[in-house]
Image (cartoon, rainbow, N blue to C red):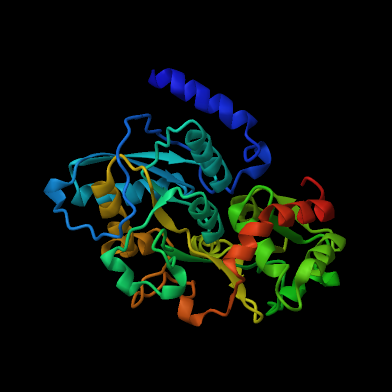
Length: 363
């Protein structure tokens, strides 16, 4: 029966409108995922509750769907299992758009298999919240997370700070810029590369924010197009191009640039004066989780100081207050954050993608 359900889900994913090869987020590392195929039905709860289970009392299988790079997701799971040895964490990893397509395909046939979800941005979670797919859980760790990164109904919470910044190849650029406008100058003609909102969840969020920010708007993207900017699927490809000297400038998430710089690549991180869009890779629990106790414990661990220190160790800026970011990265208190209303961004996300496509085509 499990094999029949899996076959049907795969077939359904190929035909759902939300699916498609044009919705794959960046993959910084190669995929290697294990999928939880359990189909037992459990009761769900709508009450806000605090997880108080002791490690030895929490057991079973936990299905974790995420868009994090494989190594980072596995490090998180290993850290959790070191504390909760009776829990087996099974990971499904892909880009945000593919993860959500899989989840919605499962929901369509009443067989959601994920217990915990961690993907790129809050707009995605707002969509799931609107579909009533999430469990409200007020983790005790939320006391140390800034309110602006926590859903008002406790359906999800940010887990880290990931800014989209300007990466510059220092062998190709002598005077480091301080403004996003540098990407539309004559010096940057055919020297800019960025991820596509048609593939990357982070880039889709950026397009929604920039297009609604004063002094940017869609004119910013039109000017990038006129300046012969190159569009690729994900952030990893952007970094590779800038670090390798193929392009001088890139729009890219900060943490991968910082890691590359520390490894000796000729790249510099620029946090432009106007500010930066920020995604927080939120985490949430699915409403019909098969293992609510383990799911709550996993969320607690991710947001705890121990879990945040693990995140710092693999190169991310922590979202928890009182913790310093890794070398080369800025903490949230140092940033000028460009943002917009999440409800508006959710309503117009597909329109934003189409507007981007009208400017750049299907690149």
